[in-house]
Image 1 (cartoon, one colour):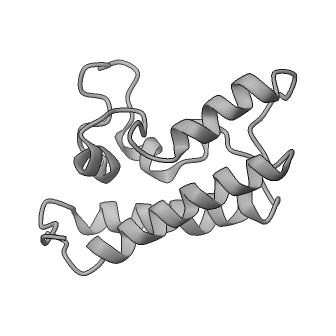
Image 2 (cartoon, one colour):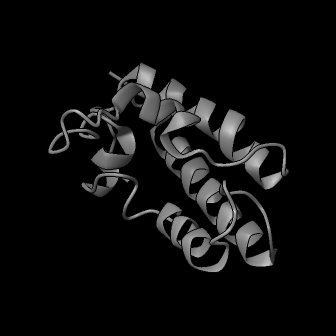
Length: 121
């Protein structure tokens, strides 16, 4: 992968925090996915008040060029819960598919972190 010089040191730190404090804990069944509420990247870069540019500074957006984590395994995780766990108030590990999908998202984020961690502005 080319050097990701467009990624700030803050973005890299927030990505690492999202990995460690959200997705690793989801996989270990220590917390649930609350979308942008417990995503450190979303807390910094998501704004519902500017829908056309709400994610544009997020490193995930810069990788995929898509808002709301589209183009990542998160989409499969999100829609699996919407379709198969309709009564669940939160997105958490409820079945073996959930576990697999959460691991996919975690691995995606970890790989991306490894690609960019040394290339900050």
